[in-house]
Amino acid sequence: MELSGKDYLILLLGANKYTPIRGKLALQKEMFLMSQELDKTGQLNDQLKFEGYHYGPYSRTLEKWLKDLENDHIIKSSSEDTKVYELTNEGKIRFKDILNYLNESKNDNIFHNIHKLKIGSEKLGYKGLLRYVYFTYPDFIKKSKIKNEVLGGN
Image (cartoon, rainbow, N blue to C red; front, side, top):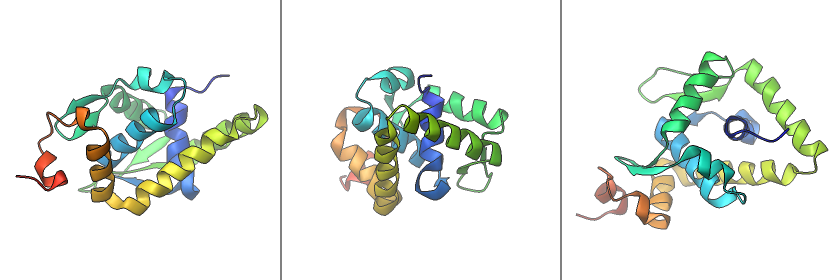
């Protein structure tokens, strides 16, 4: 079994004791960072095909995965002002299955790195996460509507 892109998304949502991710923008940026900084094979990056868009790096594929996983009752999102994404009970079972696979195949460092990325993103907070992405990956912000707001320019 090789991990799918959806499995990586499930790992991200399961990291840090299932802490939910607030907002589609934050989820997009965390998956972007995972594809850029943790994916040594380039497989996840190839699947997600991030492009610069109105709010920085954006993946249409990730949008599809979110819908698929929600339809499969693996994740749920609240419909508040800011969507909150989290694993369902079925999603937590799938998460544990993926962790078991990683442990058995001696690839548990993959989850360790995802866990560290999620904790770091949470510590940065929403604005800090955006700033990090915008400063570190300027090629993805040329079309951004919020570039000046995030970077503090005019």
